[in-house]
Length: 210
Image (cartoon, rainbow, N blue to C red):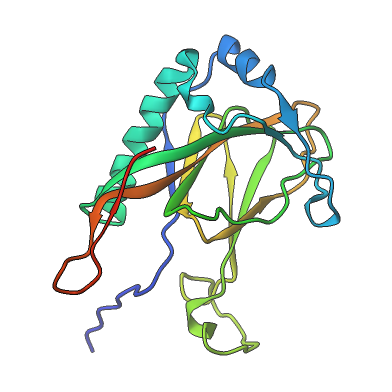
């Protein structure tokens, strides 16, 4: 019996070992940005988020910016396999000190996003997504082997210089930082630009770069 399984309706998470490790100078620049901390109960993990939402426009970080745009191009063209133009809409940094974590969240107004690890610090990044086999049902089932169809979550142990690219609607979070060193990341979002749809399908619209 021959079988060809198609992973239809999957949510691709791509991990890039970029080979670009931030220098001490770049780390200091990121650390010295101004930060704020969510203080509501839902977001009480203790993460600090940069006030700036365009940190990759800083000249000293331009090599990281170029590398991440190269990864985004690969993700768009070779993973999603789309021909649309796209652009980075926002970029920011977060810091989790010892015992702190980044709360579960998604990225609104993003087609796809990335998390780039500036430091190691036991960076367990978790993704939650309702399994495709239960999208229209709420079932408890016995899993023989976890795979793309039955797994409610996935996690990676990211290292400095690695970047995870994923669709913006996937819930993700981190476990508490058990290291004495800060866990520092750069995050960012991408969206489509240019003309989408057609006149004939009554769906034509144009999205402009900021």
